[in-house]
Length: 126
Image 1 (cartoon, rainbow, N blue to C red):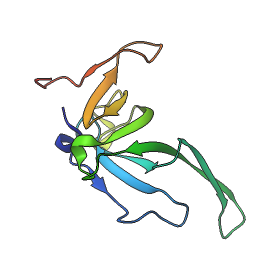
Image 2 (image 1 turned 60 degrees about the vertical axis):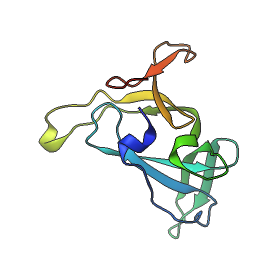
Image 3 (image 1 turned 90 degrees about the horizontal axis):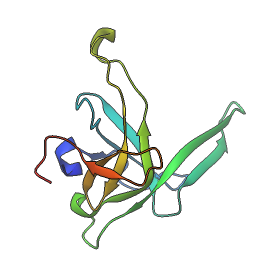
C-alpha cells in the first residue's frame, strides 16, 4: 500500500528549531492508532538538547527523501521503522506493532531478522 493510504500528516509545516519535522500516519498493522516519526533530510541519528528545566532530551530522527514535487508517492524513510506493540481502545484489541520500510511511497513490512527482506503490507495489489 502507499503511505497516502495511511492518512499521513506533516505536523510541522516547516522544520522546528532543532531542524526536523514530525510525520504522523495510521499504524500499518492496526490502522487505528496514529504513529509519529521525526524526519529530516540529513542522515538518520539523534538530536539532543536540554529543556528549560535542565533535563537532557533527545529525539531519534529518520532520513527522509522525496522527489522534486514533494508528494507522498516519492517519500522514502531510512533506516527501517520499528513501531512497538500498543494497546487500543480501553486496553483491548492489542496491536502487535509494525516493523518495516517506506520506500518510494510504498509501505513494506520486514520479513527477516537481518532486515534485508521486505514485502508489501497485506491488503494491497502490490
